[in-house]
Image 1 (cartoon, one colour):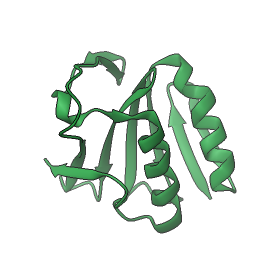
Image 2 (cartoon, rainbow, N blue to C red):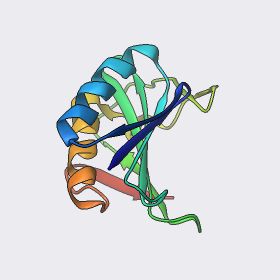
Image 3 (spheres, helix red, strand yellow):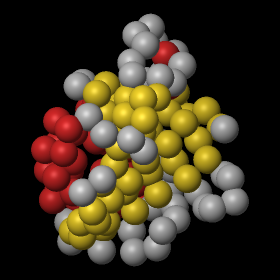
Image 4 (cartoon, rainbow, N blue to C red):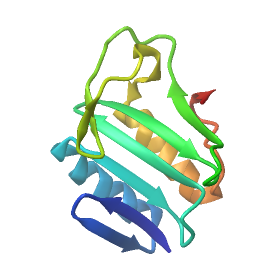
Amino acid sequence: MKIVSTSKGDFSFQSIDDVVKFVQAAVQEKGDLWVSGEDEYPCLAVCTNGQYAAVNFFQNDTGDMWLSYNDKNQNEVTFIADGAEWCPAADAVISLNDALLCIREFLSTYERPSCIQWQEL
């Protein structure tokens, strides 16, 4: 079971493709999405704004977490995270496509995705 949590509730899916389709539709609302399996951790928190995203990976509830890293990005992007504006450092911003790849890999392995670089927080 794959779970996506949004401000509108929790949604359950059987396939990774269904999750990706849901996320692609949901990103139009410029908010944050939480992606997990049946357990609360590990999980991904994905913030989106147009073609940009920032992704947090939470290994557990004791503080082991990482933020996406992209040293090629120079654009500052503002996201909505937990209902409030959040403007991470520009090097935390990745493309929406890369965020979708992260979701796919995460739901295949439930490990920190290796398709992007990360910075430990």
